[in-house]
Length: 181
Image (cartoon, rainbow, N blue to C red; front, side, top):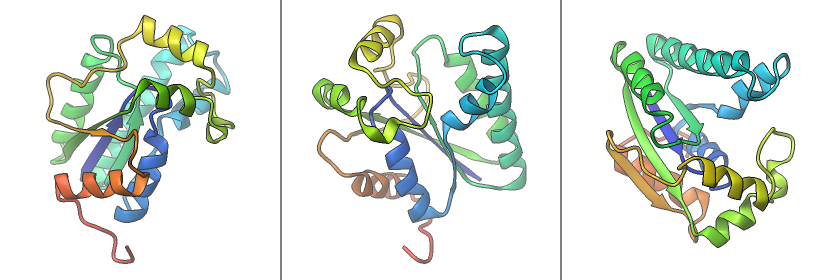
């Protein structure tokens, strides 16, 4: 089982790149917004129950995939210092079942990030959609750093298409391509 953990700030293109990576590998895509939307149907964003349940469902879903040998792509915004124990726990859960975790940090220029966060593709999800919201979030949390205690493939996708970013991930981590791609 491979877990490709694709992370970066809101609006960087995690979902777009992960959809292409899923198409090229046939890995299942576990977009972080799925757990957010699921729990938000009952609890408000920021409520202690909301936060606890989102983390619980993500961890259990990833561990169950590792048990069953189902390779996944997971997207997330990493907040340095705040999410370190969560990341370590996910790595332990995957490795316990013989899986591997491959970390990919996406980043882009600030101008591109500010433009992308307002993209229509972000509609339909409970995502940050304004430059002001993004600025506030980036002041509150360090979403621009690499995870310091793991190997990271870092991709500046300011000017490269999602297809190329996905191909770079496949090449770097030697992932198997789907037969039809």
